[in-house]
Amino acid sequence: MLDELRDLYQEVVFDHNRNPRNFRVMEDANRTVDGFNPLCGDRITLYAKVEDGVVTDVSFQGQGCAISTASASLMTEIVKGKTEAEAEQLFEVFHRITTGQDDAFNIEELGKLAVLAGVRAYPARVKCATLAWHSLQAALKNQTSVTTE
Image (cartoon, rainbow, N blue to C red; front, top):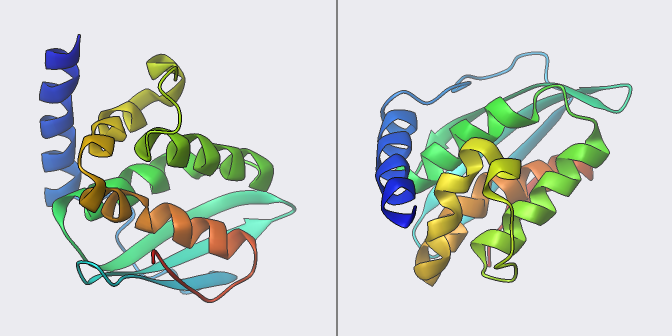
């Protein structure tokens, strides 16, 4: 199982890094957050459109490592159509798993996000994987910037 997950991790990270989904400026976003990871220099601008408590669209632009870009790409696919509460819940689950606070997570519950669970073995990469998520959380709180310090 772990070998399969590791192979899938490499395949998914490679694909989303090379072809990031929702990598665009959103002109009509009603939430914009500048996210920064000072440890490695990853920077993203997250754009979100939240209407009636639902994340109807989300996109990003920026520069970062493969894990940062893949995580942002995966996140934008997964949170579209979620309520703010559902998106916040996903952040909490993802954060607990990537930081190693939750070893009993359900891989099937996470879907494609499960491929990023392995970053918890590399503490320096956790902030790369969570940058977009911290940016989303800041957007949901109407903040305009966030760092992963």
